[in-house]
Length: 568
Image 1 (cartoon, helix red, strand yellow):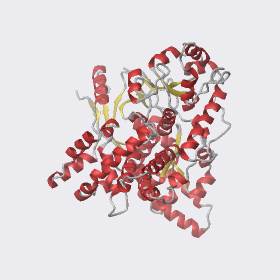
Image 2: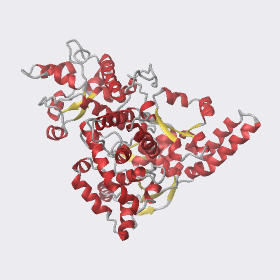
Image 3: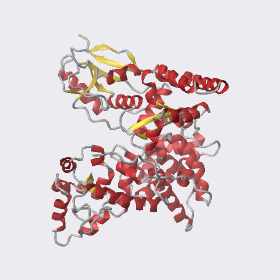
Image 4: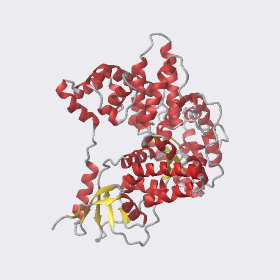
């Protein structure tokens, strides 16, 4: 008897509809949805470009071998009777389901005006946190009509939803404008919307006779294996006949610059940086431009880019306190950083210090301004063009000059908003954060030795007992700092005043200095020592905002967030 029921392609919209009605669900042991919004955006770009995006593996779940649960964002499974369990494809299906159904923590939009003006799809798609004022404003149809912003949720039912949405806008216009808009929307529909509407995933369906032990083995294998398609390997093969040995060059670069190995840099980023650094055409690091580079391009720029990458990583590690690769906010910042330093070189005088300060300011502005959250390839090219002359006393790049940040956003930033969350942790490290156990300044080595990781200041279980029900509010970065394993076990679910008093009683321990090094209030009667959560959030928001102002050069907070929510 065959293990397979069928191996047919299935339309994306049908797969998502099955997720929505809960006929397709997940085994309860599957890990939670962990993708950051930038990864979702990249997947949508691939689908709109009709690129392969992997396959889906599911089983017809007649035996009910495993406990099941709904996809994140779908209605509770309850007593609904499902048909399929997804074994491989959870993250992709969840991200697409939330994007096309307007669910989850982010909302996705297409700037149709940009598309009609000839911009690429990846430059026209963007996302915003669902709780922000901007997201709420973009839900208003009049705003959508005025700005030609299409919520991706309009496409949940396919191209028909796009047509209805477009006709509703066009009906508001005079004949000449209406015809022009309809023509523009027809072109967008033909080039992009119908591709999304017609997109199919290869789906392998295991039969309902598949034995439980076979399912367990399959699932274990899927989670242990998998090979990422590498442009670097493609170019390695292409340039081998020209005696350009990319693999050997990469191994030599890792040996010469250990910091590159420490940060586990993908060698593809070096190729992207070369594509940005070369001067024979406009900087670009899109996949097609990287694949079209010549051996001469690589030979000319390889050493300069590798050196620029190493110098850039040293600045991030030593000055911006990105002390481990897990805390790097945007991997996609590495190609432009390496290209900028390759082009600009290193001054032989005090100008080197000025250059370093500017690059640090750019890093913090890009992180807290979320510059690389969408269309990173386009942002990379723009930054290279603007930052190189800035380092030579030119005007500040847009990513710095236009920086805006609303400190209230920190109340919404959880580990899921990886870039800005990681940036905030690096900011705390930059305050000189010291270990609660040894009181030593936290380094990468100490993190490994003492099991230091990001944990709650007010324990989540303690806040639940207080009635703080929203996990987002409990998990926000304002309530997180770096705590060693021993101290975290001691904290357990205790009130801050309880566990901090125990630490404070330790004779000779510099309690106030250690708390302050984490940007935490140490003075007697502080909201932390009174177990007063809301005033604590306000205090720490103000403290971290002061540091962001200093690092970015911002002069005042922006009004970007939606105020007055009931977050309990």
